[in-house]
Length: 116
Length: 112
Picture 1 (spheres, helix red, strand yellow):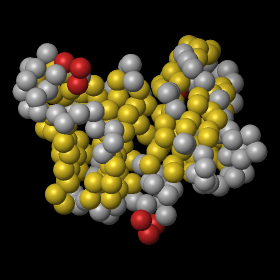
Picture 2 (cartoon, chains in turn red, green):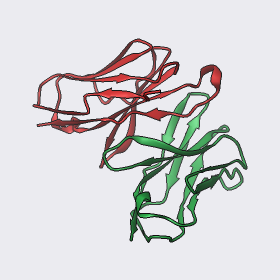
Picture 3 (cartoon, chains in turn green, yellow):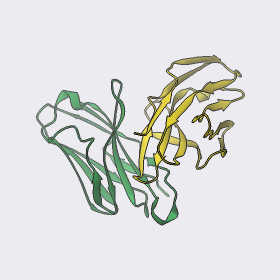
Picture 4 (tube, one colour):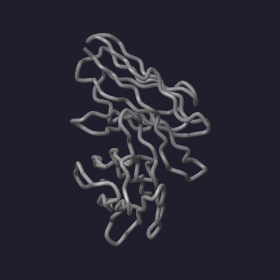
């Protein structure tokens, strides 16, 4: 299996621009998670989905952030407009859970976002 | 609520030294426990896991035992290598909510 795929790996943008991060989970996994990692705040859960439905978005910092999962093989995290404080590494993870009972999360390589 | 506390770093050791990274947890149910490792510029990789009390997870010479009585899951390795230098995260899975709770991470530096 190719693992969790994220794109782009690096993104540099200017304040006020729209940013879209993409994730392809491992095939057959029921859960998808978006995290943000910074030196100051560590690893934060932003939102997670079960079978394409958002379950908990309480970690989304503000209305500038939105996430979608239109099908089982694709999810996006959008920031509009972006601000310098959004600079971080964003990780996507997926988990089989469901009928398998395996609750391990498998992480993608991350997208390093820099907002100037 | 559920939470994980792990020892602060950085931890600096010489090659072949014994490693312990402490991790304790608070949970209302019976979580699964995990150790993840993050190398520079990479995502988190599963190192080992344990799904119930007294289980021992092991991988690449690392071990951790799920201790319900002390609510701990300490990571150990008998002889570290320079290549083990990384950040280590302890985590628990709330099986009911399917959410993870991560510790703050412990950076390990191994010197030759």
